[in-house]
Amino acid sequence: MKTYDISSPVRLLLVSLVVAALYLFSAKLGLLLAVVQKNATPVWPPTGIAIAAMLIFGYRIWPGIFLGAFVVNLFTDITLLTSFALASGNTLESVVAVYLVWKLFQICYCRVCICNHHQRQYWRNQSGLKR
Image (cartoon, rainbow, N blue to C red; front, side):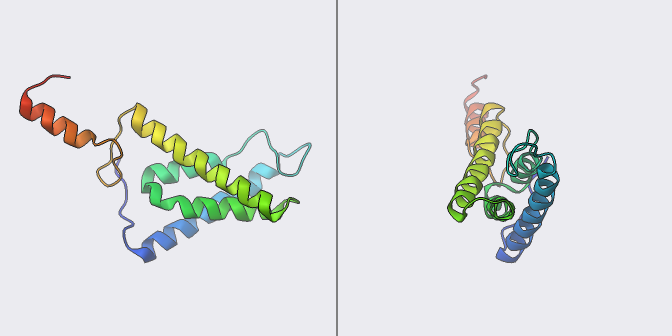
């Protein structure tokens, strides 16, 4: 699987807006399952969308995730500060999940590599060391 190049600001903005729209749409579907409170559900599909988007496009997509989460929380009956805190938490959970996937499974994509796996592998091959 390869990541897609969103290095231009226009592409980054467009992809972030699409991710925010997908997040918003799936969150509205998830909120239909709310029983006790309007903002707490047993199933939260936007988390999967956020993690998948970040795995595909890298960490630079976080503003789209934050925007989608913030707007969704505005539709519920909670305060602006609470919406901001929840959106921050939703964004951070995606960042941590992607970091753990890449770190624990040593999955590296050249544009978003966080563990210098390619450099280590190069030096192992040059020195003749086996893993």
